[in-house]
Length: 158
Length: 114
Image 1 (cartoon, chains in turn green, blue):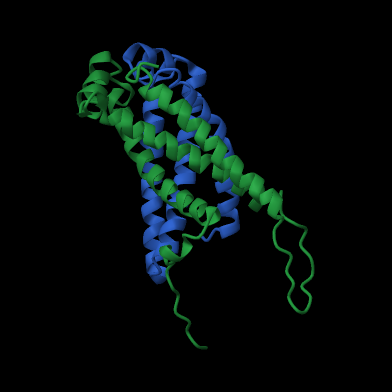
Image 2 (cartoon, each protein chain N blue to C red):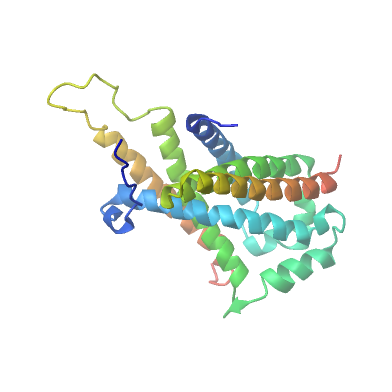
């Protein structure tokens, strides 16, 4: 049997439209969030003394003495990173919910039908697909506005 | 033991749906001020609620499965290294997942007010 060579995805070719951007956002945000999860659990557990030294001093020493200490102007780098993580979370969550509705429940997809010749495979329902994708974008924008108020509201005098 | 990719993905979707709820609760507690929500009085109040600690435990379990299965999928999509590489990735994600689960569970169970 002839051995076929597998080719890694060429990211540049994916940059064609909203679908491709959502694929890339889903992968990149997922990777960043997976790494963040490990750091977040370890850092917060350490700040809580792994449940055996739950004191204000321990919490402040790690959260405000290390993680939230570096600043860019008036903005804490820790708060800025949490803000970015929040944005990644909402992109990943909203687009992930769209993928679950389509890939698991098949909502918005046409019923499967037998292939005929020539292979006129029905394309996914375009209107439903667009509604999903725009919903993801709208949810993301609303969340970014709320998160900006939440993290930077006091600094910006809102 | 081999687990079918469809089974892995089914649990990926289930944990994803669970996390939309529990991570939503976790994020809602940062509102209306992130700075105030991570100050000690607020944190002490949050971890003092047993139901919130249970939410944290659910996040730890659901997120570690979801994240590690996602990490595995991304690594196997990006790099094609054969069976040995797949085994390496499996061992790596299981070890990282166990680290998160053990450290997180130990901390939350130690502080839960029951």
